[in-house]
Length: 81
Image 1 (cartoon, rainbow, N blue to C red):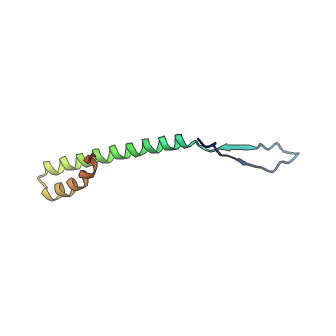
Image 2 (image 1 turned 180 degrees about the horizontal axis):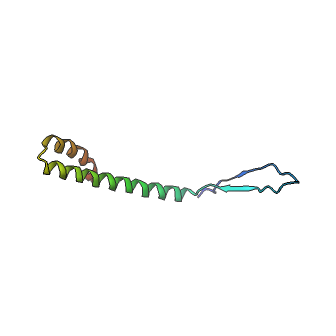
Image 3 (image 1 turned 135 degrees about the horizontal axis):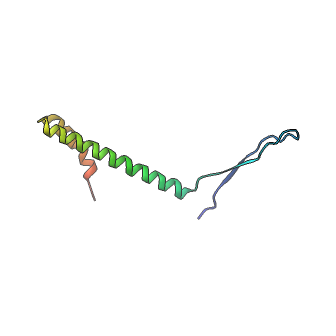
């Protein structure tokens, strides 16, 4: 595993004032990856639920054109390998 990069932000140090040297550590790759996967899953689930709701509404309204259009979009959400 690669070492984590650390970047430092240097501030001008005046003897009269107290200034702080602030170090900023980058977020580890594993945490960034896990957070991206969680966000992707949340978006996928929300979009799928929204499409299901719209499909059910089009069935209730007997709107065949809207149902067919939404069904084509929904097919990408239910496709499994």
